[in-house]
Length: 133
Image (cartoon, rainbow, N blue to C red; front, side, top):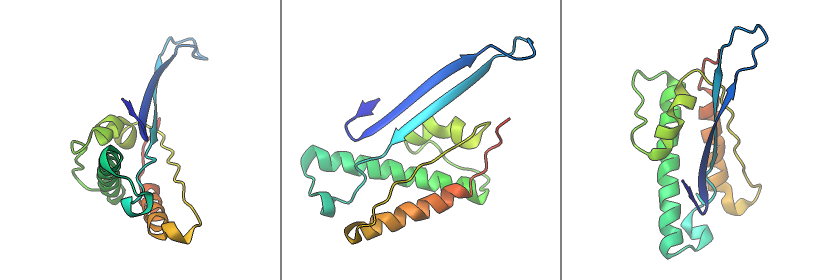
């Protein structure tokens, strides 16, 4: 699935060249998610389809933020069902995985609210612990 401003790419790779020759197979997933377009409508001036797309991206980002908060706080149950994005990312966020999240921010005073929100999200992400083997 790839829409303008929002993309998710998942790639599975097999690595059967084990050093010990045991014939084990390692399967990996790489998720690249671009949430560009999540800026506030008051700053972008978007209308029509662009505005709807921005709303969908913001909804996905809010759901991802809730999932990240739940995982970081050690919640007993975290609902990944609320968006397609969190369902796709579930194995990477809660399982045998290594996770890297890159957050981009601007030093512009015009986007101070968005930058603060991005840094708060990054702080919540830092609390998530995955168990890569």
